[in-house]
Image (cartoon, rainbow, N blue to C red; front, side, top):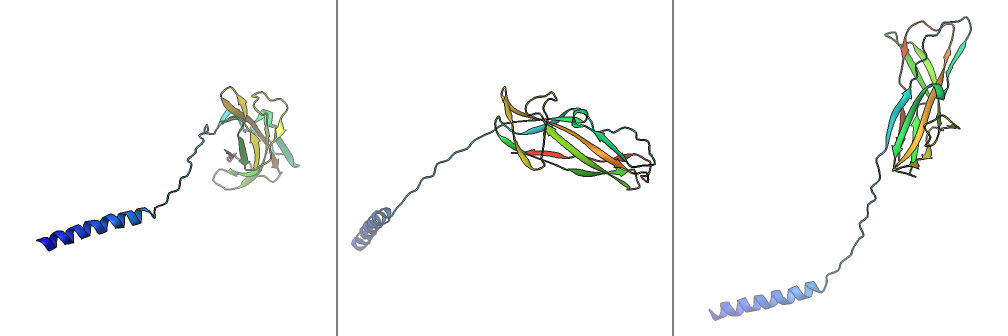
Length: 170
């Protein structure tokens, strides 16, 4: 039994020294943790539309315009003083019901900063950043969209439909 106690004591002593030796080889590092939480971004239509109504075919080319002030108004809401990138389809295709025949649409987009009235509009360049100006607790940007249709005398009569897509992102 004495050998067993000696062996056990030697083992405990070895573990004690090993712990001390390994503990002296310990190192630490720290990193700061930081997060900024900002208000989410939202774009929603306020009023208006991109309905050009009925157009009567003529014997010559027709350019039918809808100014942004007569088109659709969008309200962008987000974190005050943050910049947002505005992207949209500059040209799109309207398609005739069932036949697949197309009619090109060229968009025109302007902004009035944080003013919901159409005053001093500034042209919006696709893919460019614009600042959300503070208005109470939110940052705002008003976007106005119009466009034009080139209608040729050979255009087939019918109802043409399509989508205009506009995106905002921080």
